[in-house]
Length: 240
Image (cartoon, rainbow, N blue to C red; front, top):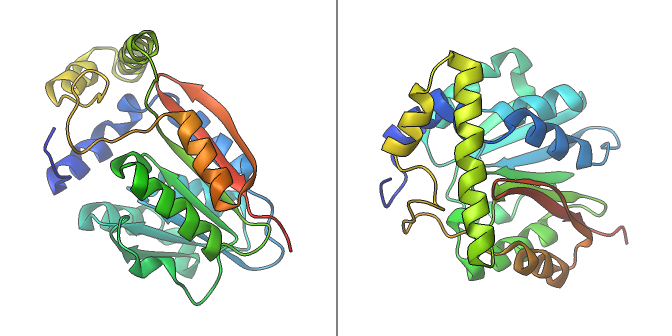
């Protein structure tokens, strides 16, 4: 993979994400299920929304909510806007840099912040700062839920995550296409950070991240799903 995310990467993920992400629909269902039902109209931020799959699930699950899809990639933002055009003004897009601070202060406190396959691009200090800033941004009772890659703490865990991710991509390739072309492209593109590490991917151990969430002030901090090095985890901002 390239050292920096490029528009070619966006196009490849839009085409192949269904095969590359373990149990993608299950992950989206878990994220959506963990969000508290907003009381009246509310805003949800989808950090690095990609092609809009998670944003679409949120819009369907919470009919009174507006979802703001944030991403750095014009390709991703354009695809998401097109795919979710039927939701009209309930879905808006915004170009942003996840690591920047400018988007972390907003006129309206969101009821929830979610992110899928993005936070692992921040180093440990960047994740801690993100968790602290999102806690301050959320309205009381709001939730932060993340679906992302996490770093196994030992060699056995790393080997297992690597093997299970390969097996997942192979099975999803066969189920979706009847062949192994997506699986072969998964390796040709060197997509797995557990097999082809690079500077773009900086996954942190899950125990560390749960601790950083608690340090930021979140309660009900937990991991709710995990497979092949991918996990869904997060916490809730207490009501005052």
